[in-house]
Length: 139
View 1 (cartoon, one colour):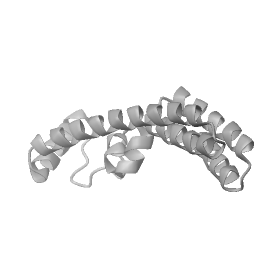
View 2 (spheres, helix red, strand yellow):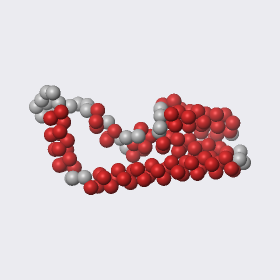
View 3 (cartoon, rainbow, N blue to C red):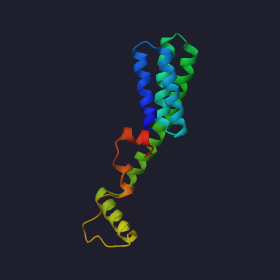
């Protein structure tokens, strides 16, 4: 995914420098990588960038295609986020959730932690990300 972000940055920079054809090349490479990784937010961002570039080139039909696809992607992501927030709102209060999670984790572990806990637990990685990271990483 890092390569897709780099291509995105290169494309946007070339666009700002007025080198639109070069910008399109890099943005399309970034778009392909985001699509392969199924990172919808990255794909939406790249389609929005491409729409901006095509507007600058006067190719309004191509710009409109990219903007409509970006809009569809972002509406889909907002819907998913809204569902996630509804589920979280319906969940028990945080203290009870933490106690339940600790209890489940202890039952899963083949050893006792004696109250020290784990320094790193893979299941907590995505839950600690920001909303933006959630969108890009699919957490």
